[in-house]
Length: 332
Image 1 (cartoon, rainbow, N blue to C red):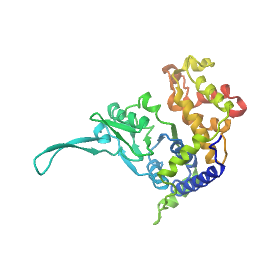
Image 2 (cartoon, helix red, strand yellow):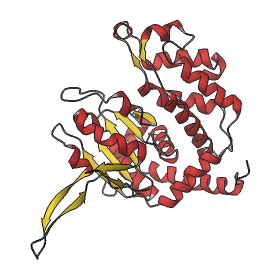
Image 3 (cartoon, rainbow, N blue to C red):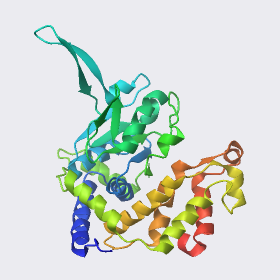
Image 4 (tube, rainbow, N blue to C red):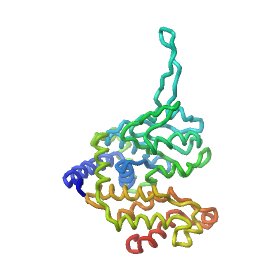
């Protein structure tokens, strides 16, 4: 490619490694979660962090904002939250001379990194306030377009255990998340390190590595990275194999009620290139596609009632699709 600059890629890769190590100082034993979250941001998208309480999801977002140099805000989603609490609202003000005029007061969405904490606790009406922002990076209030920060990313958290008082995210909103990042419990050694690091007098601190301009440069570098036709074909085959009615697998046609759309293929293409850049490579491989298949596809698919009753899981089905679409050896 004419715009492919090896020196620039190497410089960005070095800064990415520094940023990953910096975040790892505060988020212990969750390197895959850190890498996937950073991948979503560098690919220009949003991430849905799904995990039980107490697994450092909030701490991760705060650390990301500091290390990446992004102005961040946090919204605690609750059942009584209203769209205006997110977007802002116009208020009528009276000046000293008695004249009146409307003034727009910005909501917390006007930032560069938004943490939507427990996003599924708000009503669908409130959740929908994020749809335009996540896709178009601007909002419309009182008929007027208002641009958000640049870059703009949403990192939303969701508790998969407690479902009382929650509202499932609609398919249109799930599709706007580039990746679903599952935050699991740490292993024993990591948990021991967490206890020692967080219960003493000193807490690990992080410093800024990137800024907003650097993030945009990294995002453009990802888009300039060459990707082979064979990789694109594998991505298309994988996404189409996950759709009921188009899949060559009978189990998909029977079990899946709705499957991934073109955004899934776009996400795999971008995230595979970002993963290659983060690992110091100049082009993505099929291993990158396989590694990202679950985070890209699992929130863009839904099992029917009969499949769930039979004990089928999305993760197990994606493994089956990988083996069929890409091959046993590559998916292993």
